[in-house]
Image (cartoon, rainbow, N blue to C red; front, side):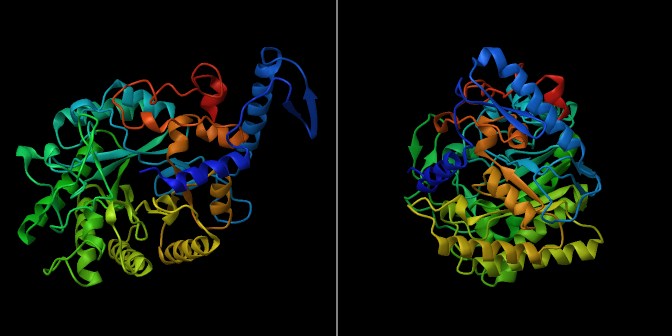
Length: 461
């Protein structure tokens, strides 16, 4: 089903001038405080234009105090930010996105190129969802982090990112019921908090490229849950062994952890179901286990209390979000250390069937997000349909410390630079999001500068 909200966002991008075309007769050349207009060919002046604008951008970037941390009107996406031992030079984060390029679950050279392309000195990247066990998968050719071969393969990716000066976290992922027997060991049904399947509104992408119906899952028994918790812990340890700087626990978007959190899914009658305290229990146990394995300061947690993706609905999204945050805050106080961040997906991320995102919905979303932001005692990251303009507003108004960008980063490997210069953006091709081609739609999107972003000026940003 086509995502109507997505078309609306693309219209917003066009209105902002973020997606546009260069015309040979309309170049603006920035020099001092003056603007000069030229009517020459691209070949005559494009290199001069790019070099001067990039030099000015870098000069402005270098003037930012590395001590800036407080939110305020002068805080931008390009203000530095410090979390624990991590010093970010800007606040534009690569969001985790499934790309289906890991043949047989093993990262390869294309992954190293893809993530390195999107790296910048002091930048922050979060990998695509990375499965924690053989039962965790629900897409074709997604990477894992539970075998030695996978750990070794990820090392090459991490090394490529670190060589560019970026920080990278591995997102730990179990899809739960959002899977199919074709992805499960021995053709077994997928596991979940429930036996309720996803509705026919949703279709699953199968290995042959066709789409199928989600089957009825098998509800985990109470005695099986500790083993799943340990899978998260061991995968986090494996990620650190592979060289990752930390991990993000994926507790959002209707996947396994979210299937325990949301009362629209969780119909259990044991200690993991019913009350909000019980529904939060699995997430808290996972976080505690991962903390015991790698330390709190290397862990981010992602939640989406108001998102209905994969039928993940809750009767009280704000109450659920605040309940999760209360428990994370209490854990941080108990540990005497903070988690790296809390990553929250905004409601506008989804709403497949909506044709409009009206003012009332915007106000409701803002109320929810600001309450979550106010409640959480730590670094707060937002994602979901952000443009450059919306991202700048979020950090300036104190609604977020960091903002993660997804589809815009797919088609613009040098997104940070383009945002810094307020340059035009490449449009993405949705048809290539989930193919297995290691180049087309993956590493072949053009850079603003020549040489695929390897020039010294681009590397400096």
